Image (cartoon, rainbow, N blue to C red; front, side, top):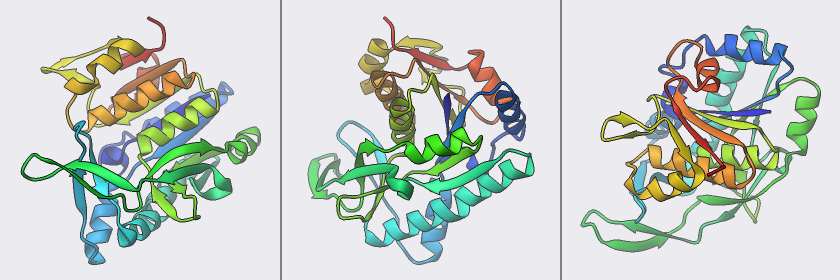
Length: 270
């Protein structure tokens, strides 16, 4: 089984149409595919039109993320599980791929603990603590619904909305949601499609890393990519054999990444 995370930066702008040919080829080989998607740009656009001001924060570790208050949580759920999710499902159906769109709350697929406090770096470069809002950390995956869909040859398309302890909607990171799903379902590989070729350090593509090397390199990685590499390490620690990060905007992106063509491949073994 392969879990494919489609990054929000390429969902609407630069995802290469031949990705559908890749998926058809994999399905014809009886490969099981699960898709997790982002869509942050669309959320920001719609939320702004609705008058919901968007705020972004940076953790002491350098990880940038959206601050999710109640209004943003509602807008996030609406756009991700509605507009973005159904757009992807429609494109897959048009290509003859039996896709079903669901949110992480459906069937209790993704459960998360609501973060009570967030430690951030303020505009003056100092650490400070703020209310955690409606952001969650995944603590349980119930993959039964996904297994049922896969058994009936459907392709699940999942928006990363988790269910909190009080049954509230929580915004969880899409990359880490893909990692947890891949680990829980014992996937062979997890692929992160983004708008760059992979992990670049000083302009050079890092083609191969072990789990240990990736973890040691995390503090050196800049905004955006650091979450993907962190998700890769989490997936491998959960038992996934291989994590791949690469461009989704070139022809036949999945096929090329599976062939380790011009991308970053991280493996569990030293």
